[in-house]
Length: 129
Image (cartoon, rainbow, N blue to C red; front, top):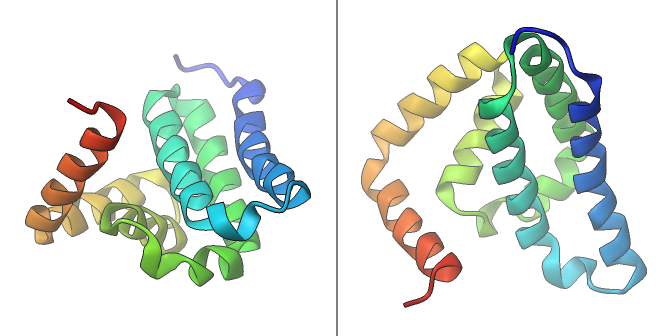
């Protein structure tokens, strides 16, 4: 868990590559909010699962790519669920994943009702009854 594993950094490139595939098929504009929401959700999941050394590198690359794609993300920012807005904001404003996690926790607690409502909606989409 404490060793560095470079292969996980490729996940970030792959997720942004999906955007290029959507562009190639003329679906990018239609899917743009969902693509970026997926990128933010998956990056946060990966960050939570990695060992400490890999986590540092993953966070740095993730933040760098968010800054690189800032215009596209901010174009759909208002269409993202609040929790993904909060994660994105915390990532952009933080120097490392520790301060990012503190910011996310604060934003989630501050707006827990909104986050909880979105969680219910999102779960129902993934697990219809």
